[in-house]
Amino acid sequence: MIKGTIIKGIGGFYYVKSDDGIYSCRARGKFRKDSQTPIVGDLAEIEVTDNVKKEGYVVNILPRKNELFRPLVSNIDLLLITFAVISPAPSLQLIDKLTVTAAKRNIPTAICINKCDLDPKTAKEYEEIYTLAGFPVLAVSALNCQNVDKLKELLKNKTTALAGNSGVGKSSLLNAIGEDFSLETGDISDKIKRGKHTTRHTELFPLSFGGFVFDTPGFGSYELEDITHEELPLLFPEISKHEGGCRFTQCSHIKEPDCSVKQALYDGKIAQSRYDSYTALYEELKKIKKW
Ligand SMILES: Nc1nc2c(ncn2[C@@H]2O[C@H](COP(=O)(O)OP(=O)(O)OP(=O)(O)O)[C@@H](O)[C@H]2O)c(=O)[nH]1
Ligand SMILES: [Mg+2]
Ligand SMILES: [Zn+2]
Image (cartoon, rainbow, N blue to C red; front, side):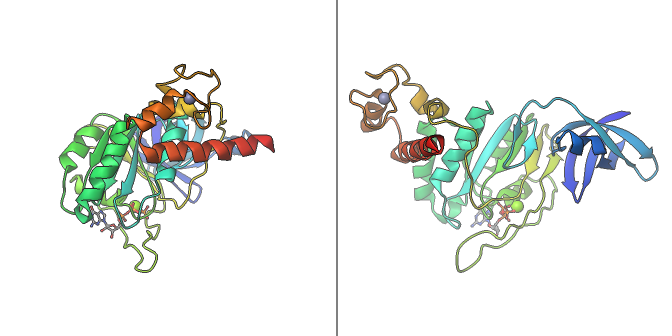
């Protein structure tokens, strides 16, 4: 039995990187029975069936530090939520859903604003929104390598998953850090300005300067799971900071008087777009509960 990390999964095969190379493995039937599926990032124990062809079976998954559903990854130190200033235009609510999901799972989050070459002024506005919310923010360009050195610094010595819509430039950024990944990148459609889902599989890559990074497939939409409206304020760092400061202990920070969150919004300490995401998600989650 040897141990390794699942770096890729395609068509029922898991590619497990161990000290003596990469093994292509199938999962033992027991995984289906226990409804546990190996995912990229997992530490796995494998049974080698062919040492020359490097084949085997995944027989056990070691306990996960954490896992995300979208992108489907495990054991990460940082979620790097990536979007483009324009082309495709970002949905801030989608980005905020991602920060909420990561907060729920106690996964540290940073924000990466790409394609700053296309509209530096708007990039600055987004940078302010997420800096105010308390996240580390990088404004970068894979095209002209703006701040790519800072991106490398951020990735160094940790395991990071890039997450974001198709076409925002996740694969391009990983190519830009000069690690010889040669990842395939795709155009943005002319008509609807959306990505074309170029990256089809999640893959984990080692970094020569220390650490690992996941390139992941982009998505079009994103739904919140297993989060209640009651806990939502705790999952926005700039809102949870004010917990206990309102007149009502169960304050939803929406309609109540003497609300310290609304005060912070008026004072410009909370970004309007983040507050808008909060209220929209709050109402949405509340409806689910009533059902
Ligand atoms: N102008 C500009 N274009 C960029 C930049 N980064 C990426 N692009 C372009 O954006 C398009 C999409 O880039 P990808 O790297 O394939 O995007 P992705 O996020 O990996 O997309 P999926 O794999 O589909 O999820 C390509 O045409 C890139 O050349 C940038 O910083 N500036
Ligand atoms: Mg890609
Ligand atoms: Zn309040």
